[in-house]
Amino acid sequence: MATSISTTGTTIIATLLLRLFLVPHSLAQELYQNVPSKSDVDLLEFPLNLEYLEAEFFLWGSLGRGLDCVAPNLTMGGPPPIGVKLAKLDPLTRDVIAQFAYQEVGHLRAIKNAVPGFARPLLNLSAASFATVMNNAFGRPLVPPFDPYANELNYLLASYVIPYVGLTGYVGANPKLESATAKKLVAGLLGVESGQDAVLRALLYERAKKKVMPYGITVAEFTNRISELRNKLGHAGLKDEGLIVPPVRGAEGRIKGNVLAGDRFSLAFGRTPEEILRIVYGSGDERVPGSFYPKGADGQIAKSHLKDA
Image 1 (tube, rainbow, N blue to C red):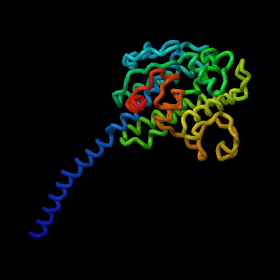
Image 2: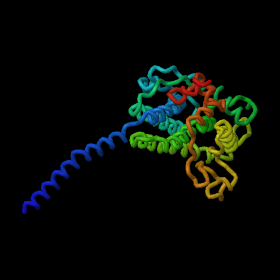
Image 3: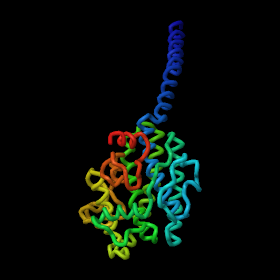
């Protein structure tokens, strides 16, 4: 009888000790996994560069006003964008782009709720900036210079230039994230960015064979040339595809229509921050700013490369 009581007492004490030491450890581990690490913070702050650009381009293009009017606190005193303005859009396109615009404002809020963030960098969203991209894509000056704000088709083509780059950045960042909080945030951002890209590509795919005037070049050819330029600038192989591709590069190697871009398994392509900087700087070098970011992007990752220049 005494032995039984002793055994029972030992079991109770052992159980209490387990609860005392193991439960707090488990809780601490869970809390640790939910706190973004330093590398997570850097990876979460970097896409603010693209989110600022998309928010300003979509807000101004659809509403004729930007973050300084819609959500001035999010700019953190950063300089106003250069050359951006209201685009000449049909009602459907204006409605879609306005929805994108407010979604981008939400993305800025979401990221800044998770990490300190930084002020809006200087952005060059002038017609001349987009014209330079198109000239580089075709390897010659387009005459007259491409104007993204002239009509809805031009604006949709200009919208094809940047948002997809941000999407590939989220895909590339996801496996590098450590905390559950960071992974959840990026998954949510990626979901909506992917949806935006799908809508843009679908609207352009509907017009794939239409010629962009006055150039006499089809919409599909514009997207192919832009994608080829981004692959060239990224220096990381094929991670970008236009709306019409050789069937061998289409889904399952069986179709030329390419309304959604993907690898041979129809999985989204991923890019590193360095690849993204090479593309959005238009220089092919993460150390040499230009194009949409005259003074360079912000955040620890981008600034570390500027220091190397």
